[in-house]
Amino acid sequence: MMPISMAEPGEPVTIRRIGGKDEVRQHLAELGFVVGGEVVVVSELGGSLILQVKDSRIALDRTMANRIQF
Image (cartoon, rainbow, N blue to C red; front, side, top):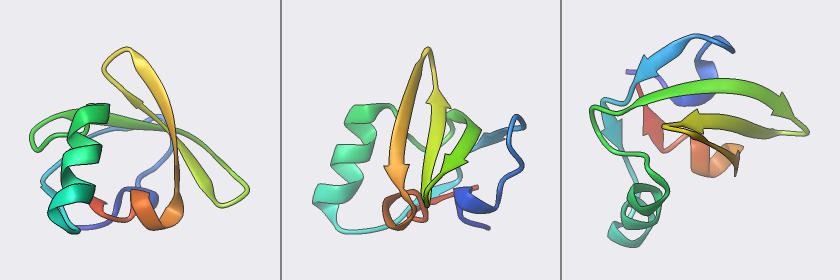
């Protein structure tokens, strides 16, 4: 497994694992990041990642994004 920051921009990937404390995993789940879900890295700006999950685009800093693995 690799962190989402290693994914190629524009290529859909399936989430296989979400790490971190329970509160962090719950927060990411509320944003739509769930195991088995599909995510696309749209772009990388200033160390943050713009991710598309379902019909939304969400910006996460690299530390938070690295908890999402595919």
